[in-house]
Length: 239
Image (cartoon, rainbow, N blue to C red; front, side):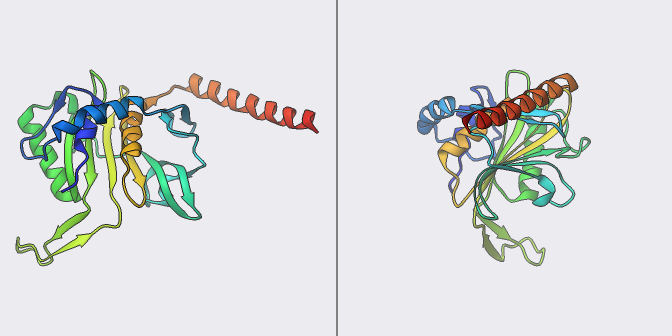
């Protein structure tokens, strides 16, 4: 079973809470993964004026569409880095109000037994190949998972496996609260296969997501307006 959890451990910090029932890390591969994650370049800062967050990205998105275009009734942005027409090849989906506040307790205060119960429940109901609790930083934890390539199906509810469904692609996902208590989910689309480089960038990127206040948003908006005016002036002078 292919699972990239060792990359998550390396990229998101040495202190990691692993559940006994969860897939183990490929320890011999972790140092190389850590190096790749640390070297992942995230030169572009994306600021969401609508939802009030910033996140460091591997490049400037070639397009941004509402999350509701992919998930009905969901709020957030789809940051598209590569596409082929309407086919999204590489993107991050940033969801706001991503999970129910009451159903997911404070991840930073969970005891190991409670964390194992929570993750097992989430894994069982979502078809993940693996799931874990990871440190975004010294004070904040996140749920990190990778969707399964193959999902066992109980078609009649008798507890017996009747078949296996194969997914065309896999996704990496992360769910967490910010310092202000906002509930975010970030998902990686990387078609047709998850690349180690895109996983490393994603794992590093989610650690950079921050809430921004009104003044910061206005400042960012002003800078964009100035840059647009400058570009227009430069083009005019070239003519």
